Image (cartoon, rainbow, N blue to C red):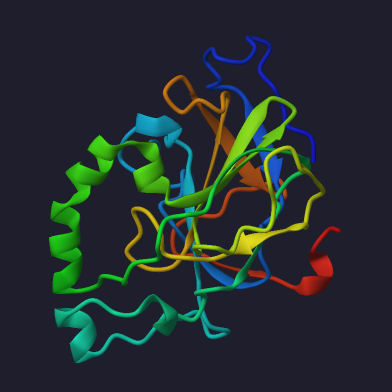
Length: 224
């Protein structure tokens, strides 16, 4: 899929630029922190995240791991969640320009543990974007960079310089970086250098889902 570029060029204001993506997965996924509901979608324009979106893998009935008494009082193993390790696919044609695959997947945090985790947010922000993104892949599609973040440690199947087609296998869904439960964070930007990048608007198959929507993608609709 071809990105729509603003004529101002890379490194300048891309408020009017956008890129249309395919969903980078199959199965059922829950939409969170969507720019369809607010911009900046994650509460801050920092690190070119103003138009980023989070997609959480869920069961066929649209649920994540059941909440138990233990969930409310202590961290949970990431592999308890239905989407941990689920395949992540390339959402667009392009060239891999960066790969990071060495951060461990940490436990998930809900209930009281999530409050404690939130208090450590400033330390991750101070450590920079990689500490927030965790394991990630950056894809250059015609000058717009698409980032897929929070990938499972050791699961990335591509290397820098690899040419991708939409639907190619990339990695697996993980819980690395700034993540309270396994999910994939997707953002688009106008520069691979996060310190200079501006956020770029994104859509999926021509539209943008809102918070709480459950997306279902059948394997037959993946492009290879």
